[in-house]
Image (cartoon, rainbow, N blue to C red; front, side):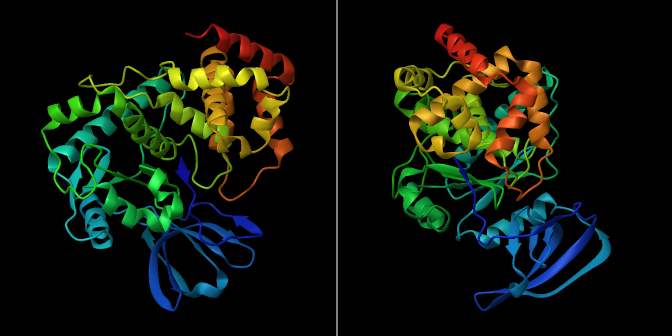
Length: 373
């Protein structure tokens, strides 16, 4: 599940190229004045801005909130790792430390062993994700900066922090990726509420989280980590109108944990048995226009059946229509932020990639999935 956390709306958009210069905006929100340093991503006709700061956070700034703005000849650049770590530690509650890997900055207040375990898990997923798509002609780009993951020691402290983002849903969500902050937030899955120390070394952590009862929780974290990679490797842009069936189904496609391998990720594309069972149970009552419904809007993703069908459709297209899928992904990668597609435009884009006869494609889809084991 992606958390789309844009506090205000921008209208009458004037899309701009990402600024090469360093921009600075002084804004006043809720009687608090703050300075944003970064670059303008979108500028609305009324002067409203979508602004990216050097830590990768996206800010929607209304004209009324703007006190002043300026730019200089200094080129825009994301924070260096040490600078980013300092900024994050100032934002997070006391007691956090940081751990840097090749592509990630892990901020944690649990044990260092668990932070290292998370770093290893994410790096193997990152490597496997890149290899998977490179072998299929869609080479992901390296992100311009480190990917940030925030790991709390226990669910209680996580919920207290995540309440501002998740609201009442915080008690049912164990981890999430935010489009606004570009960060993953989660908690130590080996601990219990109120526990501040993770028990065990990396091997013991793997043993604990390899138990069948832990599969779903680890898969959720991998799911969110996949979202973060997708939105930072050139496949999707944050706040672009990416169909939810595609983004969520793709994350499910990659979510099966591979905790045994020391490198790589062998379970990418593995049949997701629970999702397959849900999809097949849904088939007898699946409406004739289910595919069109899925393409037109995101309402179907409010149910488990919608997630299962989204995974199944991704699975079918990736394996049975790889060239067409690559073409479709390239179209989505070019979408600008904050521009909402009409339902008929979504269907037209899909037809352009996979053919105009959606009824025939849907029948092929159902037949294909009936043979999957």
